[in-house]
Image: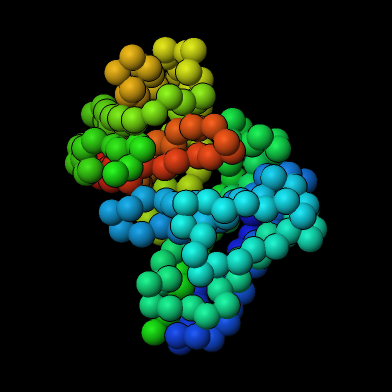
Length: 115
Length: 110
């Protein structure tokens, strides 16, 4: 089954404790992206990647890192999480390098709480 | 402010009625997409309309695009309880960037 998976689905952590949210897709998509969703603000793009070893900042990249060493994986790293990073995070992928013209497939989401 | 803003923010209807939600945006776009999100879950792509198209249909969905007014509408005909969800428009503004609106929450009561 074609899908985007994220782990963990739920995470409660404390300020400053490094964490990684994994994202994996099995559709051989070139384009992958991370979003955060906050009430009243909709989805905002954090980082995106057009292919292996190619990443770029979205609208709200501060406090986040990403890497794209393999085509299928696009982990989101919070080196020193803070309470304002409490949010619902989504990973998405699509099939073209200039892929926003194509359908994006979303993962199930990771609900992160930073105390 | 948001590139894409949906209107209304919330909509409550009965099963069988039609639901219409609107999206306004600010800059030129290559295309506009509509997504559905069931409570707290991932978004699911519904339909894409390109900037040179005016109307598109998919099953019970009808999307219109008016680039002169920078607006789009999503019509769901003969709504069902299973259509209860949040609906988002997303605009492709170029530079590999897809900008989402804040969404319309639709409640369809049996």
